[in-house]
Image (cartoon, rainbow, N blue to C red; front, side, top):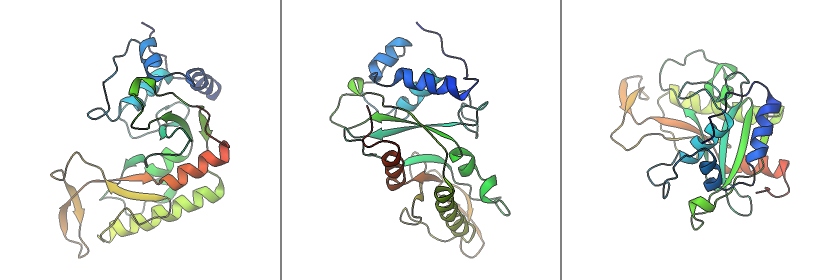
Length: 226
């Protein structure tokens, strides 16, 4: 059994680790660290991300900060098809429902999570057995001024809708969206309605739409190397 890697102390070390696992199947990586694979992801949807976090030495755990705390880099595994098309939206963080008055974009957790991201594509087509799915070429990314402006505009729109207690659907936002983030509909959190009255509402999370991650992959690769 290989010991868990310590947290990387430089971007070069992090990139080297990510490039070293590119091309491996999930089964090969799990076996390297003697980690048991689930039969499927039905009850363990976060397993792939946790495996890659382990292999790369992510140290943030469940704390609300980037996964590699010393580097300020967030890790995002990106499920893709064999053609390199993103298959899912990308979860960023929980959307705060209260206590955000006066918070600006650069102070937000969304900004902190997206300021510097290591994207790791992973094959994820349903018909492909989990153990055969391979890890792709990593992409270390920081938003351009234009990309940040697009994300900031969406964030400000969504935060205003939250503050005003308006109904929000996944259609709001061009690249950033809000979607329910809970095990089931029975989970609620404190919020305000459009009259300013306290209510219990379903927790929501910020997600990147597939159109945004597709754009990132197309800019970085002609096709996504797997």
